Image: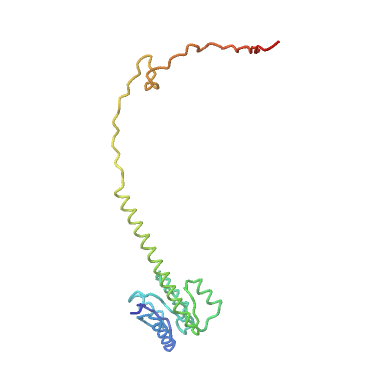
Length: 200
């Protein structure tokens, strides 16, 4: 069983569209394809159902790849857009990439198309998974915030005993105030060194 792929194809050449479909079918994709040639037709296709990927010819008489890319981005859809064209220079390809195109594949190098599509599908799936995880995290934090308020209980006052006269509160565990040493306050005099008795 092949990989299902909903493909929106912006292409005015029926022959070129058949070549693209044949290439993807050989690669194992089960395609649901709709080909559009105008902005109105593309808007209707976007309204009708979600799409996994969009392939667009850059140079078309009425509606080219640049306009199709702008329309897709105006919708805010995170759908990979790959330019498949035979008449586009390097400067226009770079400009299209900066405008949001996922990649560019020349029509005479369609062997490159399948790996590019597979890569873009993986990256799009990764982005959707991150968005789901972030949404789940926000929901969990919001739920915790509504349940996690701590109730403040009044503190019970404990009576403090006044120390007895002559007692030392800080030394109660040691059994009472420290005893004064007998020699406290007395200055000791140094002893004189005595010469040891030896033979004279």
